[in-house]
Image (cartoon, rainbow, N blue to C red; front, side):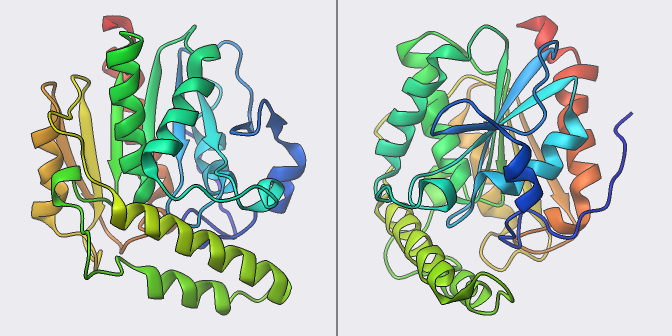
Length: 269
C-alpha cells in the first residue's frame, strides 16, 4: 500500500521543491535520486515536461519508494545545470540519456514521461531495445499525443500557458523567470521540430495517461500511442487538466505500482 502525503506543489506547477534538491543524491548531471532504494525490484526513469525539472517527480519518488526506485531526469539549462545550453533536439536528449543509462541496467527499468518527456521516453526506449537489446518493463506516456499525432507547425502546444505560469510565480525573481522562460522556449522548439523516425516503435507495454480536461491532448490523440507498440497497451483517464498530477498523485502512483509489481511485470522480464 502506498502512503499518501500532501505537498504544496506538484508536477504541473513548476515549483522548485527546494528541500528535495537539498536532499537528493547527485548521481550524474542527468540523474537525481531523492529516495535511493538499493533493494528496489525495479527502477522508474521519470522525464519532465517542457520547462520542467527533476524536482517535479519528488512526490512520485516518495510515494513509490522503496519498492520502486525513481530516477528523475534533470535536463540541461535549468536549476543546477543552468549554465549548460539547452538541447533543442529531442534526439540529442534521447542519445545523452541512453548513454547515461548504461550504468543503471542492473535492474529492470520502466520509463515515465510527461508531455514532452513522453516523447523523450519513447525515443530512449527505442534506443534501449535496438542498441542494447534491453526491453523496458513498461513505458508510461502521460499527457501527450502519440508520436504520430504530435503537433508540429502552427501550434504552441501550451507554450503560452507555461510562460504565463512562470511570469506569475511568486518567488525567484526576474532572473529565475528569464531562465525558466528560456528553457521552456528551447524545449518547445525541440517538440515542434520532432519527427518520429521511419519505422519507429517499441515492443514494451505502453500505458497512456491523460487528464479528462487537458486542453491540448484529446482522447483520440492519447489512444494513438497504441500504434507505436507491438506489446500490450492500456489507456487511463484521470480527472484534471494537462497537469492532472496535482490532484491525482496517489492514484497514478498506485497504478504504476500495480502494473510494475502486483501484476508481476518485473518477474516476467
